[in-house]
Amino acid sequence: MSIKSICCLGAGYVGGPTMAMIAAKCPDIQVTVADMNEKRIAAWNSDTLPIYEPGLDAVVASARGRNLHFTTDIRGSIAAADLIFVSVGTPTKSYGIGAGRAADLRYIESAARLIAEVSQGHKIIVEKSTIPVKTATAITSILAANSTTGATFQVLSNPEFLAEGTAMEDLMCPDRVLIGGETTPEGNAAVEALAAVYARWIPRERILTTNLWSSELSKLVANAFLAQRISSINSISALCEATGADVDEVARAVGMDSRIGPKFLKASLGFGGSCFQKDILNLVYLCDSFNLPHVAEYWRQVIHLNDWQKSRFVEKIVRTLYNTVNGKRIGVLGFAFKKDTNDTRESPAIHVCRDLLLERAHLAIYDPRVSRETIQQDLLDVGVPADLIASNIEFSPDPYTAATGAHALATLTEWDEFRTLDLPRLHDLMLKPAFIFDGRAVLASDLLKAHGFDAFVIGKGA
Ligand code: NAD
Ligand code: UGA
Image (cartoon, rainbow, N blue to C red; front, side, top):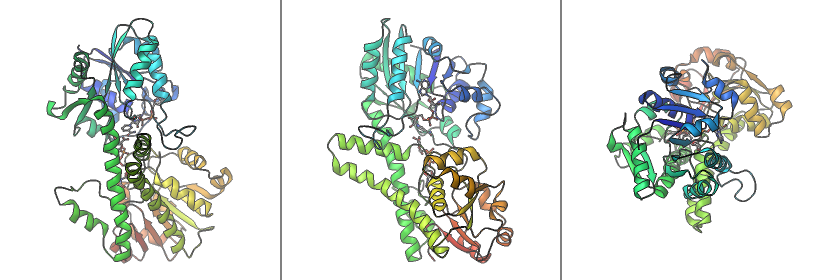
């Protein structure tokens, strides 16, 4: 079966960039991204895309209007497609059974029901969203029970491993593409059809095929392992601070062991992003459901450590500022969950800013990509009263304005521009002692001290 027309349900951080790359690499395949969010689709069709991702604008521009389309006509797009990616959100459930742990699969289910209702002939359905293992069974049964036209379906798992900020590089040159399918002749044919799409630009040896359950589970496990590395190095950051060791030096020494490897060993004030926490919670819930409490507890600890890392950073700030930040101006540098994205989902900055506001600090926040509306909404969502947000936050156009008259600065995102800040200028603008709390270790602590700052850099001993 050769694919001529692809549709993707969900025009988010995964659906948009992934489909743009497929369209750019496969000019003979029509690729339509469909979403009910009219504002988001309008932005995808405009010059200001709804997400910031280096290199994305050029890839979209190369294919949009030719074979890449963004639409709210979900039914029409499903009807026209040979292959349908489901790339809708799978957030942590906030209600009922499994609240706070299980994945909320309502968007997946409603997408499956709509596909069943609209489809005719044979279609390949691809789980692109991150889902609990065995979701393909649920999708298959919904499709079979709800099709009235005799349509047939093959469900594949094809999890996405891109990271925000490097999404286009990751899509262009992935470590691997994983495709799971039923081990039947029909399943193998569907796997081969999808593999042939990726093979247009990805070497065959990097296209890995497995059974459905291995593919679904591998995605959760990959994120759990990545997050575990961060919690591991963050746990060591606290020990470095206590002993006088330097966490970057330790990470380098440890990471040069080829069995360990150097990546993902950067200490921080905790990991954020929409997926690590939700996917580990999902894994923990699965383990509990399969009566594996020891396994569940092991992974739960990765999140506990991450929560502790965020709160100990705030405690460090409050304790250092003579046990009160009430009425004090603190310049906040960065709000996104990592550099090179405008995404703030689960950003550690949200937790730090919430706790500082509840201590009655005045925050002057600067982020090069995150809008003030997003910041306000994020803080409302975590329970900061609206009047406190209105009275105690100002939005600064640059780091120097944020620093003016500030008791302290806190670096919460590792934007490259913070590495080259004019330290003497910052020091002049601030109240004295001029405190800096660098939660991303972007600034060299000896340099900060040489310029007269009272500096705390995560993972750097005194
Ligand atoms: P997102 O919230 O940015 O986008 C999801 C979109 O799906 C929304 O715009 C929503 O309106 C739309 N949607 C919901 N139901 C729909 C339906 N029935 N038809 C059409 N559109 C529908 O989410 P995201 O960040 O793109 O993540 C999507 C999935 O990919 C999640 O399961 C996530 O875990 C996974 N994932 C995300 C990343 C990442 O970097 N963000 C990376 C890998 C995997
Ligand atoms: C992560 C994974 O890296 C992707 O492979 C996966 O596809 C994606 O989740 C997903 O499933 O959503 P992402 O969250 O976009 O990607 O970004 P990462 O680079 O993994 O960073 C996550 C968080 O960890 C950020 O807050 C980052 O600052 C932090 N981090 C990362 C560290 O604190 N230290 C590190 O060494 C690396």
